[in-house]
Image (cartoon, rainbow, N blue to C red; front, side):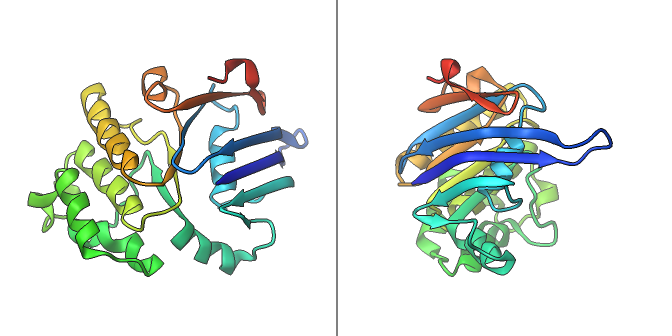
Length: 222
């Protein structure tokens, strides 16, 4: 479902090019979950952003469901992001001017796949039913993250990309959010690639790989 081959990425610095990714390759099967770990600065978020089409590699290939990203221009990439993937970030990135119900539906409407029955099921399973008329600022951190996950899953994406999605939550809220996420994914063909620094969170996913100095550490793969 996800095929990443020999990605290389540099960023310019005052001291010259800084190599962030050095020949990274990985695969993810339909419905599979993978934790991407590594120390700060190892290239985890860079890799996630490249797979999301938010940045471009210097060389290498990324394909999602057979769609190669390197051949897409910016407008085609934007259309692909709306329909092909779901994104969940540590910062939630909810739309403050929209109520919970409209935030939940936002991605699915952009993708042209709004399904009222599926949205109602998500709201119920995420514990948001009694909060649909509130605004994001009226929710707790855990509720906001559950809403962000629901928004990403409402469009039934083939691939969910999550960058430290529980990093702003306390341990209890983090465990609650992860439990709900894994239950929802178990009932869908959506694949999950999650950046996390937490071995406890990573242990919930099917596989783990570690980025070190811009390369995947095969010895640390599980």
